[in-house]
Image 1 (cartoon, rainbow, N blue to C red):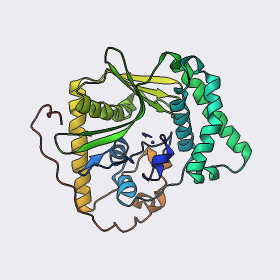
Image 2: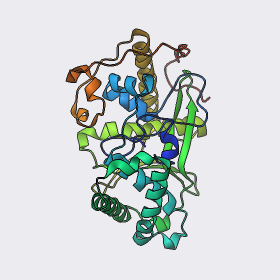
Image 3: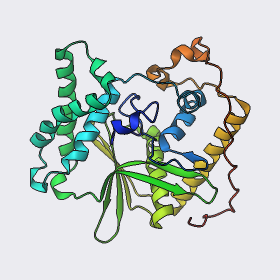
Image 4: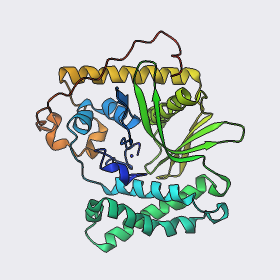
Length: 314
């Protein structure tokens, strides 16, 4: 949220697309202080990999997107799970999580009034809240929160690479063992991907792991995706080679984004996710016409070209 409202709605106004997505909130990008040079979040990197035109609409044009029930439910579930850990360990029960739902929903609607317009009537809203409650019940079949004390929740991360690119984003939960091992946890309200799509799902987690490695000097021990749509865990133990490959990938992505910015070539890439895209009416692949590009701002400084191997820590 990401891909997402999670300190949620407070950042939605700062980031177009923060309420959109097929299976939950996109990762929000609105940090309190934006880095001066080029920067990239996992959600915007995923946008460009999915469709360069989608990236343009969200980042260059900053076109608003209406909230969707799926994205709003993801935001709500994230908010409840974040606040569940405010309770004493022995009070972190399924009933306690369900009790948090109405208050968190009221808070989100107060911060983003458009959410109140998602439902035609009270019956539809009750059914939607029941689906969120079932996801929360499913969470307790995957983890025992009475035995977990997160070190950070909704943690803002920002890391400057040797190339000059800043990585930024928010981690749902960071667990640090007494012995120092780090686990990054991300909640997903969609279904776990098929095996052939797992690498794409893990890119976000490796992105966060790279940011932590470059700021803390330690490679996280475990990356854990918690899929509440069907009750599955996806775990991965990264190593240095993984994170160096991720670093090369994000640098290459930024260079491709910079080329598109310079050339104005933001071509669409039709695919299975088009079904959920709110910009179809503007997309040439669907007979639409994008709006004129905004006037260019000053270009970001070019990335340095690092030597082969591990860049030095910033």
